Image (cartoon, rainbow, N blue to C red):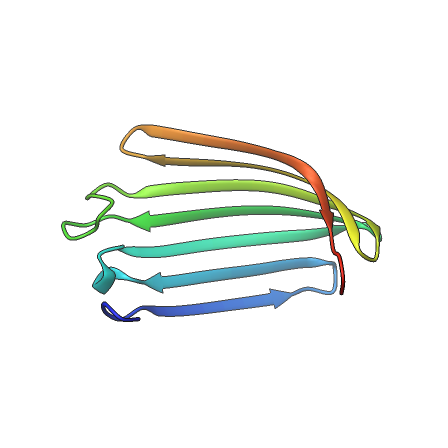
Amino acid sequence: VANGQAKQATAQYKFASGTTLAGLYEDVSELNLGTNTFAIVTQKVGKNGLLTASYGVNQGDNTSVYGTEDGTTIGLGAKYKLTAKSALIAGWSQHERDGNDASTFTVGIDAKFGY
């Protein structure tokens, strides 16, 4: 990174039941972006479905461009595979920092072209 150092560690474990647990820790405080910690769980549903839930924290501090307050993000998602190259997707996320909330909801088709 040109302006400083970023450090990141990730881990993932897949269970035979179709559940996957993953985590991420990222220290980008030298870039004045604080630290990030995320936990993600996915669950296969039947042959074609996938559910996802995630929770993340961006830790604020005196040097962070985001301020001293922590920011949290919660996400829920679903994917249903239609063909080898397409799927229906839906997702919701909410981000909160300093009493400001931002929510998004997405519905769509994930289509792969040319590969």
